[in-house]
Amino acid sequence: MRIIFMGTPDFAVPALRALADAGHDIVAVYSQPPRPAGRGKQPRASAVQAAAEEMGLEVRTPASLKSDAEKAAFAELNADIAVVAAYGLILNPAILDAPRHGCINIHASLLPRWRGAAPIQRAILAGDAETGVTIMQMERGLDTGPMLARASTPTGGKTAGELTDELARMGAALVCEVLADWSAIEADVQDDALATYADKIDKAEARLDFARDAETVERAVRAFNPMPGAFFEFDGERFKVLAAEIGAESGEPGSVLDDALTIACGTGAIRPTRVQRAGKAAMDTADLLRGFPVPAGAALG
View 1 (cartoon, rainbow, N blue to C red):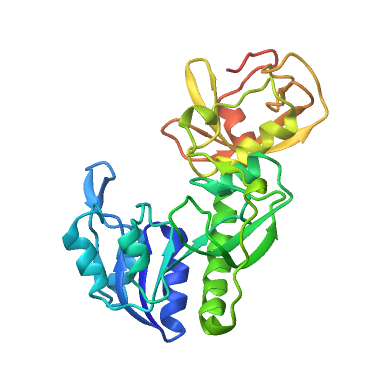
View 2: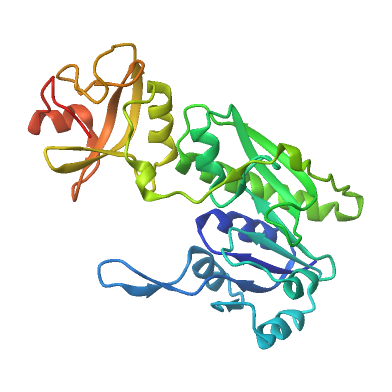
């Protein structure tokens, strides 16, 4: 097929490479414009733009697709289909309707559960036993279109970063399967009554709430790894918690129970196993405590 690919972050790169490897003609790649990054705040191309340029593909990075000129340029590509993966811009009706078979999306959830911006983190936070990817025909609603294929994986013990990498690979394989058998694919209409919404993550959510039960706190640690990073504060300093295990100990929520940084929760306790002080490298908790002891009885916030 003649494909327009639309994506921005690392999540979308495996699908771009898989479609090219499958022999499809990728006539253009759309990605969000370069953004200031790093200490120098110099413009940096997205992961998809960098990959596409490496592959010798035409890249377009409009800040918006609303103008008549952008709509016309998109339509003139005469594509069979557009494949979208975490592009980050809303597609207007003229864009959705331009390719012969419309636009399909690689969405990182088992729709209709977790429509919206942060499906991977929300699945972990909610304690879902499984999540997955859905290939969906795009329409005007937010992730409401008919489903073309789904694949699932367990969530247990995985961080958002680990799940993102896994689902990216799954989505790449699944979209290739869909396109390879396009004429035989039967769409499955979503049941709106089962829909849930994955709101964008607010950085304030990453502060650990030790009044909650230990299982909920541990899920937050995994959901916010790597970004924005679950954290607590002690002695005026912020500590990111990158990994933690659940304990059965009890005490005043937020209090340190021993010299191994076991922290009481509303029910049970958590024991961070990997942490990161502000401005420092990540390290195992045992290594941190050798140089920066946090005494039993300390209150964390």
